[in-house]
Length: 222
Image (cartoon, rainbow, N blue to C red; front, side, top):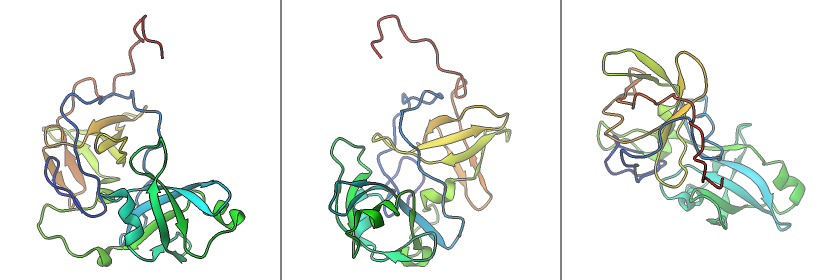
């Protein structure tokens, strides 16, 4: 679970919100954002398998839990086809983002079987995560699909993902008028109000939120 931006987070969420000076335009890191939330409202998305790692049954895993390695402590996790798997030996992938892990799947050691896991999501029943202790607690997966409005009630766009590139959670927003998505730090300064039950987020974005990336400086080596 998580609380409103700027406060403590726990459970299947990511803490450490960004400061007001974080990048918020479409100039986002070259990394894959979190996939959509589970279409089943009774399930909470906890992770997604990636490519096999090595030849001995290990596999990459993108974790969406507050402590990424804690995904292995949730017990049986549900695959999209209804099967369940259990994770073992979770550790951070070398040189990767904090939420990219190397894991083993209990009972799976054949590389072909590991390859078949690629892109499969892992979910857990919402009721296994317990009830929110306070009314402002929520799951980050619940933010996906919400309408983003400014203070006057004008629709800005829709949340399509809640990525984290190591510095804190971001809202990836698809503009209402169409075009490339942009990233907004998920902090109290930029997201002063949440109404998950009402399906909306009230944001205070910078004016250039959806501005295209500017030209690189002449001395930029990238």
